[in-house]
Amino acid sequence: MYQKVHYGAALLAYAPLGFVVAVAGFRTLAFAGGAVAVALAMVPDFDTRIPFVDHRGPTHTVWFAVLVGLAVGTAGLLFGQGLGLFSTVALAGFGFLVGFVTICSHIAADSITPMGVTPYTPFSDRYISYNIVLAKNRAANWLFLTAGVLMTGGAFALTMLVV
Image (cartoon, rainbow, N blue to C red):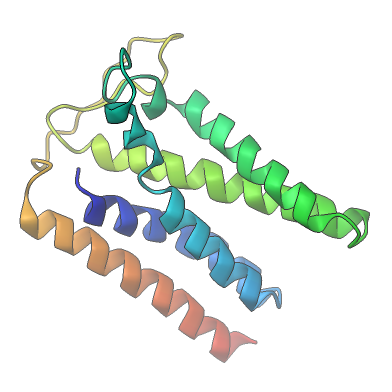
C-alpha cells in the first residue's frame, strides 16, 4: 500500500489507545502518541532501501512489530525517568503499545493487497492476502487516510465531552 493508507491505518489503530490516554487526563501525551504513530507508519517499508532484504520480508512481521515496540518503549522509559516509578513504567508501556500497534497496522494494511504478507516468518510460512484492493488504488488510499483522520479526530473530540 502507499503512504496515505499506512498513515490512515496507523491513525485508525491508534485512535482507541489515544482516546483512553486522553480520557485518563493525558491529552498532550495522547497527541504525541498519535504523532509517533504517523512517524512510524512507513518504517516497515524501509526494507526497500536495504540491500538483500526482501520487500514485505522481515520488516513485515509481528517480531519486527515487537522490536519497534521495545524501541519506542525504551524511549518512553528514558523520557519517564525522574517522574516516579509508576509514570516511568506507564510511559514505557505506552511507548511499546504505540510502536507495536503502528507496525501491526502497516502489516494489516498490506494484507488486503494481492501481494499479501507472511507476518509470522520464520516460525510460520502462513501467507495472508485478503486480495481486496490493489496497493495503487487511489480511492482506497484516500479512504484509509480520511478514515484514520476522522477516527482519531473524533476520538479526541469525544474526550472533550467525556472529561
